[in-house]
Image 1 (cartoon, rainbow, N blue to C red):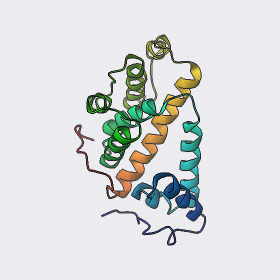
Image 2: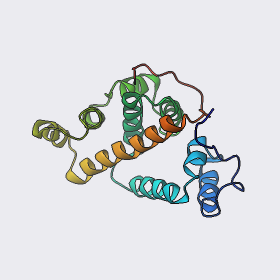
Image 3: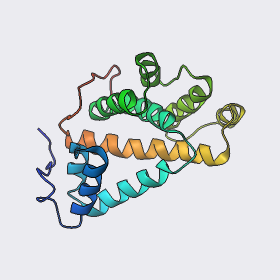
Length: 183
């Protein structure tokens, strides 16, 4: 059971959160529990959707974004996000099981994506304190400064949802995937 209220319906949400939840339902067909928890604060929900929407318009492709999300969720020990992004990775980004396994281990089977996922994992583990060689490896793999900034922001966005879910103990409403690493 969630330690922070999971708003039961769009109509029960604060008025300012209702149009945001309607938008999520229109896009996804459902309103995931994560959004129902964040909707307790319409400002937080607006902030989350704003950053997420802006990053979807960025230079990183959907597969790379999901790969990063999987790595960050596993490192941060967020069962909700590992479950959600395993589902989204398979069904929306069309990642295969071997790729999802690699992503959850902080890597990728695609050479260019591997550099991004490894860098994202390093950002999480080192709390942003990466080295010049870490950045150079990413640049050598073909990532420019804009893409590097986006990788860091995807780490931050996913860390945000990981932390909300872990603080709230959000009920998982995706097929459950067990964490492999200790949180």
